[in-house]
Image (cartoon, rainbow, N blue to C red):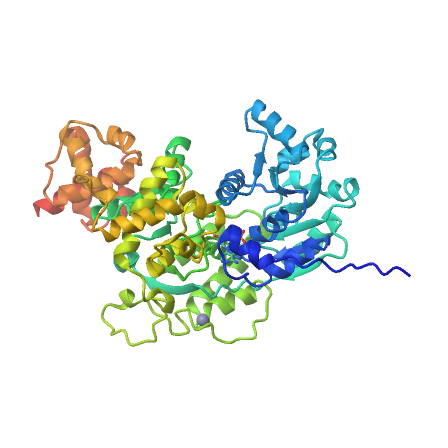
Length: 617
Ligand code: ADP
Ligand code: ZN
């Protein structure tokens, strides 16, 4: 009798991990998932953001001769991955309908010749006629479905094009399918398995708990909020940060106020032109500007690994939204802070918006989310534990040891209290980093990024720079021990890295790119434009800000006595009306004054007059 040996030949997976990625260990479950796929089985994987899903389908693609087809809805993310793979010496391509036709043709042709280890397809491209036929001519190894929850109507991001993926199983019965998602309730998980026709898949569900994220929640008022924000950013100087602001004007004022305090930040919101939005996002992605202030429009498809802090300036509408946004911190697995600086007025505002909802069912659901949110921020339960329970887990632990409830404090938040708490930062491994060298290498990376027109993190991760500054390699073989440097990267960049380290040791220093000439603060720019005779509306256009935002800046300039009242701001008649109303209603607040004035007189105009009157008093 012939006994078939169905066990896998021993493949040195760790060797591949070291050689191509420069990583020493697998993250939890990665190895098991990879082995499951290599054995030709289907898999269903739920892993939190930053868990390391992509490695689970990228690494198996190196074994054997077939091509792994990856379906992902996020085009920017596909291009990022293809670029990173190229750096590692792994051949891959992206195919989506928005690419030039000739380029698509070339990729389709090369795919048939089997030159790609990985082929990224958008779901739209997948749904196009003829795609299935074409796929039949490709030596397929695996289908990897990213963001698999998009296939389910039960999920919160259903995408009709994903439904087409249900046809893969019948058309390619022999090709294993792996589904990956970061957000799926049990119902959605079942739905994914059913819709894709997965056959007894290996199920890998990792906890939503991300121990490297430190949650700190603080109630503040508008004064203390900005103060805490400033302290946080100063403590995180030089690192990448996202700030979520509740409204477009809050985004703009925050950017301006930060600029006023010497912190450069870029804005991102839905009312900016597409061009400006892209420019700001790119500045941030390339590490040219470290702080981005956005509305919730920002973040989908952003996979910048080394975001060190996400700061919320208001209560989000739901815990899902909060975790999705806060979870953009620390994708690289290193420690990161998730700060929620909320104000009492947020609660009233949320309630107000819920009351505006017409549909009763919808209103009830919104109220339910509201009470969960309040319980989360006002309660005294461990934050990650509350989050895990909310996502349907039953954590075996009581205390995470790393959130504000469990005793974690950010020293700068309580300037008055002495920091005697057990400190979780800096991490033990960070102690022997040569700060000077780290700083030098970051600047070197930025110059490199500009030269090669690539985002800085694609060139080297922060964690890799830290490890370089810790190990200070001088020889090629030492480079290969550094976290995040694999064979291909060492061959491509190794000589330059070693040369940079040598230059640093020889006393060479690089300029800080931010310090070329004095930069003007937003208020100074506004002042110059005013002095140049520009109207408020023109300044708003030039500075890409809302009129209200410009008026706020002018109000501070007026009350500081930096600029005199300009007759072009409004007619004398209008000003008189406002003055009279202010005498009647008091000079403190704009809203009572607004109420007794004709509706065409705006808040901005009232605030301008009040600012001028307060200066004269
Ligand atoms: P996900 O898709 O699950 O959100 P990614 O695949 O983008 O996560 O991985 C997040 C980060 O973790 C990436 O920067 C990746 O390089 C890194 N990473 C993945 N696996 C490992 C590992 N075994 N060791 C170290 N870093 C890893
Ligand atoms: Zn905790």
